Image 1: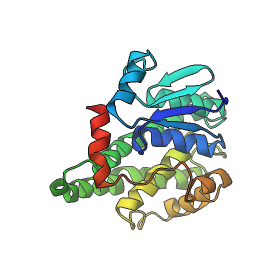
Image 2 (image 1 turned 90 degrees about the vertical axis):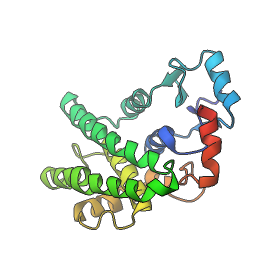
Image 3 (image 1 turned 120 degrees about the vertical axis):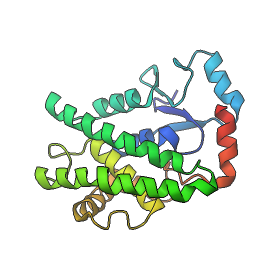
Length: 221
C-alpha cells in the first residue's frame, strides 16, 4: 500500500465525485480502482469490504469507509476542513445537507429518459434558483467573508462549488441572478489545489455520456 487513500467506484461522477473534490481541495493524492463490471462490485461484497453492500468505499488510514457522508466527514475532520468549533461544524453540516438535496436532483438528471430530461432540468433549475441558490447568496452577504463559515475553506465551500459548476454544465447562465455566488465561484476556482483539480487530466470526472449509462447501471443492477 502506498499510504494514499484508495477510492472504489465506477469511472463516473456519482456519489464518489464529492469525495474526489474534497480530497483534491485538501491537496491529498489518491488512487482509484474502478468498478468496470458487476463482478467487480460483487467481489467487494463477498470479501466483506462493503459494510452495507454499497459503494462508494474508500480505504484510508487502515479503514474501509462506506457511506458518502461518513467518508466526507472523516476527510473534512482529518484535513481541517470542518470549522474551528462545534458551532461552525453545525453550520457546515447544515449547508452541506441542504446542498445534498440539490446534488441528488443534479446527479440523477443524466440518467433520466430523453423524453423526461427537459422537464427534469426545468424542475432542477426552479428549485436551484428559488430555493437553494438564494440561501447561499444571502449567507455570503450576511457573513461578509470569502467563505461560507468562519474565514477559511471548509467542506461547505467545496460542496457549493461542486454543485454550482455542475449546475452550470446543465445551464450555463444558472448564476445570472446571483452576483455573490459568481464572485464566490471565481475565488474558489483560483485556490491552488482546486484550480489544479479543475484542469484537464485531473481526477475530476466529466459528465457521463449517454453511451456509458447502460454500463454503469449494469454494475449496480
